[in-house]
Structures are given as structure tokens and as C-alpha cells.
Length: 624
Image 1: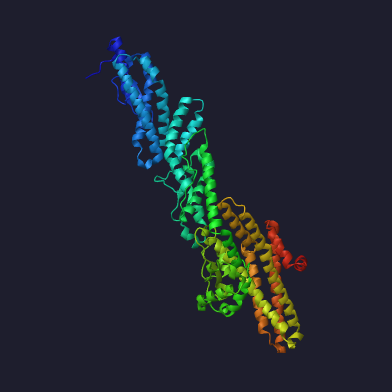
Image 2 (image 1 turned 45 degrees about the vertical axis):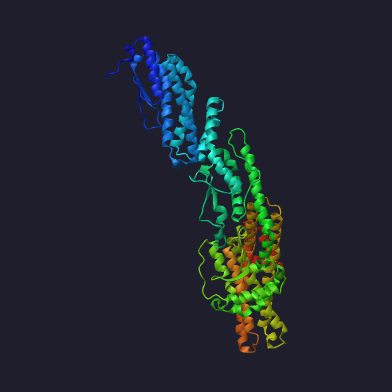
């Protein structure tokens, strides 16, 4: 039936009819004289068509009120559309909004009761609804911003925190935003508590600021050449960090990481001062709680590594073998394995090498090392140069063919969790490269020395009257000087000072991140100053060592030479060795001088002083 225009009703009836219609619209039901039109989407403001016969004054009054209906509809749509995939924070926000909607509906029921009793006029309704108008407008603006911004988790909390800050001075809005933020933060802060107090992530909907990557496991630390477990096992998701926790995010990440390592060692974790973390836009008690948890976790893991698992002693053990701190075992081992090292890698029995290594250790100072049984031998399918070049070029290591025992020999070390966090496969590979470098230099020195001693002990024979032989002995002496001084430089001007610095730093560390940083810097500096990070220098050095080995082989073959006819040929060979060795050495010194000067690697200056102590090669370079 056709609705009777409100203007046709008696004056008293008009007022009651308008109030009844307004209350219906506020409850989400279309009125008889006030029609509702949807916006572009369910989060756009509604339009209201008010019957003209109501009168201009009443229309203005109604327009002041019905905007609440638009806000109410937006909030209800948001609550109904918030499914489980929106996460716990949005669930908590919706629960807070539901309580506000419930109060709103109770308020409407009370107003309708006043209307029935005839105690409610349009003007009084406008007055009574003023707090509700602002309240529903605030809640609707939050619902719209969350929905249109696809906000979940930390981004919702950032939105609410920003609204609180922006509404300072408007107490009603500020209090309402704070109320919503406090309730929405509850599930997020419960996740935070589990992380910083227990090292556990309970995050079903990917809301928390820390994300766990299961593909990175502690077991891979001794298999793969990377440190990705510590860096990538747990990572920060920047878009999930609430704005009020941004400055604490790194500490939050590290706190849980420390506890997680302890937990994976089979130890129970129980922070003695654990308290509920409560959000407050003004009182920053949560900052102190995070700081306390971080300090506890840092010290707990540090004690586990340094005291219970003796990290410093373990590092000293690794140093004694890989960096030849107790070098007597290596000399004994080289004596025992001289024949094996000349054999093709395929013909060597690793078990025999293991036995000889154990014998060498048992009869040396290293026998005192409580961790000596963790040392083992490995025969690699690639030589040192190939290994270094491939790693420096970030490429896959390819197998090298026809390697001898000397070229493939390397040490390895058994490291268990949690020490593998520091002494990872990547770190062990760096130690291994330093060892192979030192080992080969020792081999070259040993080769040159044996030739020198052989000719010194020979009785005077026809060779001593040959001019090429005298010159050859001078070259041999230069080569021996080069190798011995380069070894001295590496041992006492690179490895030992850097090790002393590492030990000093480890005594002052406050957390495991500092341990990792200092240890990484130690290995990086050692590799760099031992010329193992620059392929150009590395190839020059390798060529010099190969020349030394080739020349000593040549001298060995000439030991019993007494044929005058071959003296001229040997003179040519000796001259060629001299020329090649001097040229490569001068190129190396020249390049080292340039790098130390231009790239600021001042430690390399020590090589120049060691290998060219009297300035002979520098004067030659200046002449050329």
C-alpha cells in the first residue's frame, strides 16, 4: 500500500514517526520515510533519501543522525567478512568491534523504549547520539582502512598506533583507538612472549614479525658452504613489524634465535622474569621487558658455547692443526707420508693416512689436545687453486683430473651442534684453504731444503767447477729465502696477530652475533693477507711455488752430472729459471705494492719488507 506522506500526519504524530524511522535506519533497517542507497561498495558511505514533506528543519536533524547508520553498516560488514584467514589480530579487532556494536544495539533498544513511552523527541535523540556518532565514525574508519589496505597482523597494529598518535588532543577518538589497539595487540604480544621467553614461533596465519624457514636446518651447517642457517633460518618480515616495535625488531629477532639454539641443544628454556607484555601507547614497559629477555638469552647462549662447550678451546684446537700452531706434528706426518703424497689420489688408502696422522699426533705436542680425535683427513677432487678460484668467482667446484696425494690432501674436523654455529662448513672450508696453502709452502720448503742439503754434503766433484752450478745454487738460495720468509710472514705477521686479536675480542663479547662477526673477520683478514682472496696474486704466487718445485727437481736430476757436453744446455736452463723466477717475483711485489697502496691493505707492506729486505727488487723495478 502507498505510504502516507509524513506531512499529512498530525504535528505530534510527525515527530514520533520521524524518530521511529530514524531508529529503524540506525538498526540497519530501511525506514518508511528514509530510504537507504548503497555506495560503490560495502565500505563506501551510504546515501539517504529523506521524504521532502518532513520539512527542512527535520531533514537537517535527520542528516545529523543517519551518518551513524552508514558507519554501523560498514562495521557490521567488516565483522561478518572477517574469516579465519585474516589472522588472530583481525579476529581480536573484530571481537573488540563486536563489543562496541553490542553496546550500540543496547543503546538503540533503550532509546526505542523511551520512544514508546513518548519521552524521546528528535532533538533529544540528536543530543543523546552525539557520542555514538563519533564512536561509530572512528570504528568504521578503522574497518575501512584495514579492509582496503589488506592489513593483517603487524600492519593492523601499526595503523591503530598511528591513529592514536594522530588523535592526540581528541580524547574520545584517542581513547577509542587505544581500546581497539590494546585488544588487537593481545594475540600478537602473546606470540612475542613465546618468542622472546621460549624461542618458539606459534604463528598460524603468518602475522608475526619473525618468520621461520624450515629448509635451513642445523644439520646442513657441516655440509654446505654457507652461513645461511644463522642468517636465514629466522628472518624479519618488515611489513609485519608494528610501528611501535620497529626500533626493537633486531633485538626481538636475536632474542628468540639465541633461545632457539639453546632449545635445539635439548635444554629447557625458562626466563625467570617472564611477565605478560601489555600494549600501551604511552608507557613503554614492553621495551624494558624485551631488553631484559634479550640480555638473558644472550648470556644463556654465550655461557652454553663458551663454558659448557668450550668454544675458545675448540678454536685453539682448530688453530693448532689448520694454522700449524703446533707444527711439529705436520713435519712428522710429512716424513711418514712422503711416498703416499707422490702417488695418484686414486691409489692412496685413506685409512693408512688416518693411521699415520694419528701416529704423528701421538708423538708430537698435539697429543695433549683433548679434541685431537676430531681431526680427520680428506682427499679432495680439486687442488687448492681450483678451490679458491671457484669460490672467489662464486662458481661450482669442478673436479680436477690426475691429482697427486699432495694436491688433494686436506684436513677436516668434526664439529657438533651448537659449536657448528660458529665453526660451520663455511668456516672450516676457510681454515682448510689456509692449511692447504701452508702445507704446500712447507712441502716446497722441504723440497728445496733437501736439494740444498744434498749438494752441501756432497764431496767436491766436477759440478763445483761449473759456472752454471754456482749460479744454480744462488738461485736455489733465493728460492729458499722467498719460501721461508713468505711462511714467516703468514705465520707471525698475519695468523698470530689476528689470532691474538680474536682471543682478546672473544673475552669481551656480549652476545653470539659478536662471536660470529669476530670469527668471520678473523678468517677474512687471514685469507686476504695470505693472498688467498685475490686471484691475480694467487696465480703469481702459485707460479713462483711451481718454479721452485720444478727447479729443485731439475737440480735433483743434475746431482751426478759429469758430462761437459751438457753444461751449456744446463746453463741455458738455469738462466731461464732465474729469469722466470725474478720476473714473476718482481711482478708479485709490484702488484702487492699497488694493492696495499691503492686499496688500503696496509698489512701487505710486510710482504715487501720480508721478500725484498734490502730493496734489490725495488731497484730493479725502478731501473726497468
